[in-house]
Length: 196
Image (cartoon, rainbow, N blue to C red; front, side, top):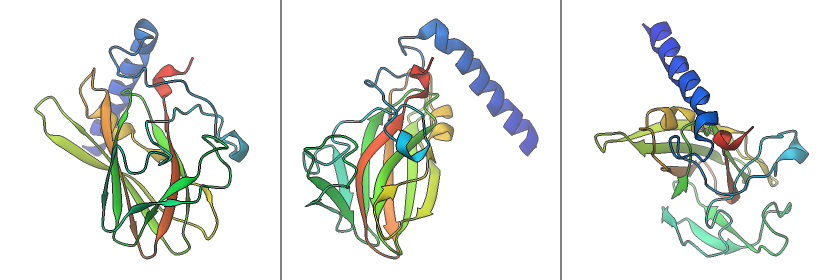
């Protein structure tokens, strides 16, 4: 049964990929989220990512829902991925979380951000609403943060995107932390639908 479901999901993704050229403007599959660049290329990731609104917390918590003591603080990640003038990041204590809505296309497979926090276990979940208005929340991935700033691994948003209807343009991303505090900065989304 699992094999049948997997084959079915792969067939849906293949059909959607075939439609990308016919809908280069992203109207069918979502998208048109902004310009994308390979910001993680220094770490061997040549995929192009777009920067969502307030992905670097330079506008405080605007556009984010913070819980469990999460707060915007002074101090930027040291790579200044978004801008050399940036000066803020998000501190999420153990048990805290941060949620934002981002633009996406159905075939957007990943997101990344910069993080530090020795002993912090960072979990990402993604959710989008189906045709009935029911939100499906799926596991985007979990990893341990290090003691110094570093890019997160690629965290998948593909399954949440596939469960969303064609034309859906937003999904929610939630970053939660356990074990120890973590500092997060510069959230980027991989806009696969825009790739040529």
